[in-house]
Image 1 (tube, rainbow, N blue to C red):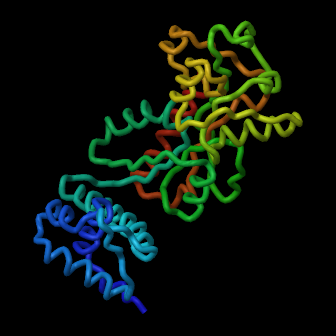
Image 2 (image 1 turned 60 degrees about the vertical axis):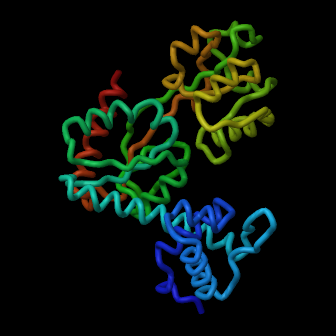
Image 3 (image 1 turned 180 degrees about the vertical axis):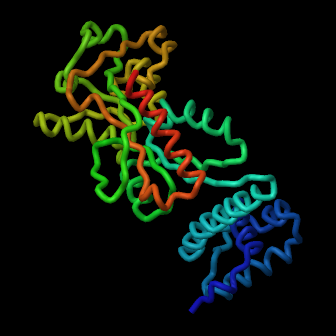
Length: 305
């Protein structure tokens, strides 16, 4: 059985270079090592796992199935080590707290940049690791206490968490100016389903909401293409490739001037609440509790406006 203690980080880095460059010679040049030193490290890894990692081809190296598996783990290991070094190193520069915050796309694009800038402006010695994630991932991470705080949409239950309303997000339909729907001042989502839509990636809370609404109406959401951001939806709609549903806060005035129409949806679900959640306020580290309370205050102000 492979002993995990027999792996060393330098050998894993050399293996990663060889796999990505497809050459031991180029890996040696990039790592500033001799070719013989690189070859020895690869051989040692192969002895450790008792499997070949590469097949030597005329045009370079090709990963074996074992090599491909090790490559995926190596990337994860080295990424975690780099994060660990960065996190620990920050304490030497006076950082007194490191918070883990995950948020969905709507919150990251619309509200968190302003709020986090204000929070950190008063607390320069705090670091926040913000990751954009899907709502179900955020709920799971909060429940297992892998993160301190999360901001996510209201369309999935989270009975084990402490939740407070953070912001309201109103959904609008984006169309090109010359589109048949552009003449409407307000529109029901069901009336958009005769046209091709541009949507976000599978798994996002907004796409799930739109698909569920189409199914309820016994219709099909015709997704012509899926993209990774609200800005990309706007660009595709502007190019005449379809229509799309986005939060009103993600629609920039420049886009409207450039030939887009933003039409409010009349559906009740088109007004969404974004929650800020924690596993337990009592167990939060002090800096995380400060951020939780700060976001609640900002949320109260935003909901009141």
